Image (cartoon, rainbow, N blue to C red; front, side, top):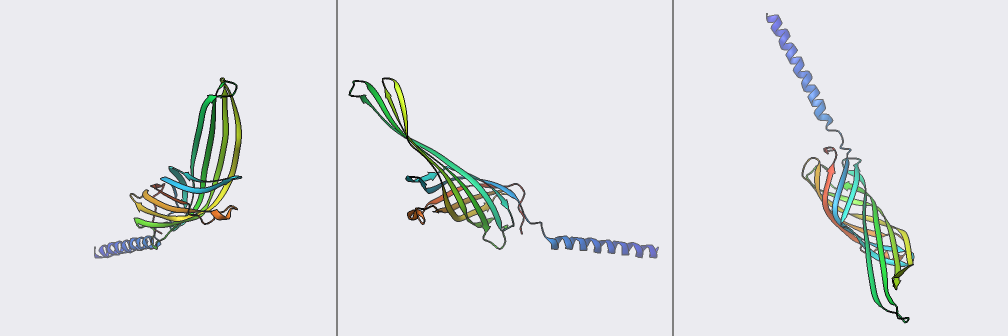
Length: 228
C-alpha cells in the first residue's frame, strides 16, 4: 500500500511538473503577431490643387472616405482608400434675339474629382495594443480630375449644345498626417485623422501649398488585434 501511494504521488508530481512546463512554454511564446485585415470609414474632407491641362482649380472632396488595410506587423500597416465628389454649376438667361425669336442660353460647368490614397500607417508606441494610440500616416495619392464646360442654346424650341472644354488629368501628391485612435471593442476603433497633400506635378507654386484634410469615423478589424 505504501509502495502504491509513493508511485501515485510520483505520478501526480510528474504530471504537475509536465503541465507547468507546458504552461510556462506557452506563456513565454506570447500571442501570435496580429497580422489582420481591417476596413474604415470616415466623415471627411480633403483639399487638392488640381490641374487639368489649361485650368487650375482647388477642389475639396467629401463627405465620405473609405479604406481597406492590412496589418503587416503590430506597428506597421498599409491601406488603400477612395473618395470622390462631383460638382455642377449652371447659369442661364432668356430673351428675344435680333430676329425676334425667343431664346434661352445656358452655361454648365461640371467638376469630378476622385482621390485614391495608398498610405503606410505606423503605430507611434512601444506597446501597440494600448486603447488610446497615435499613428503616423505617409504615402501617395492619385487624383483623377475631369472638367467639362458646355453651352446650351435653345431658339424657338430647338436646342443646340456646344462643348467648350472637356479636360482630364491625373495629379500626384505626397500625403502625410496623424491619426488618433481609441479602441472601443477588440474589433472596433474610433478614429480621427488630420492630413496634408503636397502637390507633385509640374507647377511649382502648388508644391508646398497647404492642402489639408480631416475626418472622424470608425475602423473595424476582422480579427481581434493582439499585442506584439
